[in-house]
Length: 182
Image (cartoon, rainbow, N blue to C red; front, top):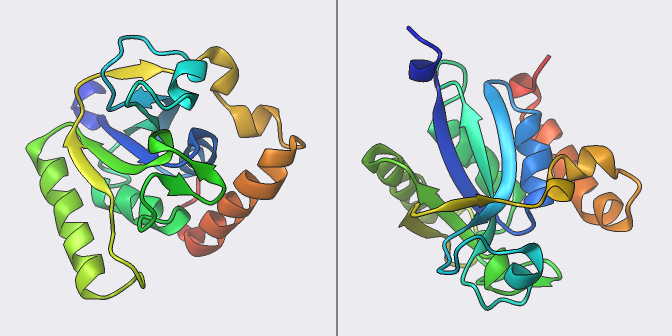
């Protein structure tokens, strides 16, 4: 098999992209994580424009992974563990459509997996409130500005990173210890 055949891409929105990027970078089978924007209607939006909430974009991460090591479904298990999929357009103190919970699928199989996981979690009543995660096709992904890439790694002492990102990373590591990169 060639390298291309052993690669899939997932695009996920779960609040601030710094949190998701920091978590997925530690997951075994993940080859790269890029913070960016998806789900909007303005070409090549800037961070400032996305934060204004007028472009329709969500802060997302685009995760390139090897499906022989980690499945799309396993990515979703991590995704639903590290953010609250029941708060519409909000994650903690971050409020606006840019912080919505969304799965931007690349293939019909990803759509099916996302809908199945949501249905299973709803049936099991994992959350006290209904899941509001949007499941939509990826139309366009725009990488965020360079200073957003590897943000937690490069800015661990920054107050938001210490108060918000670090606890999510710790929660992930605790729940998925066996799936961490060596």
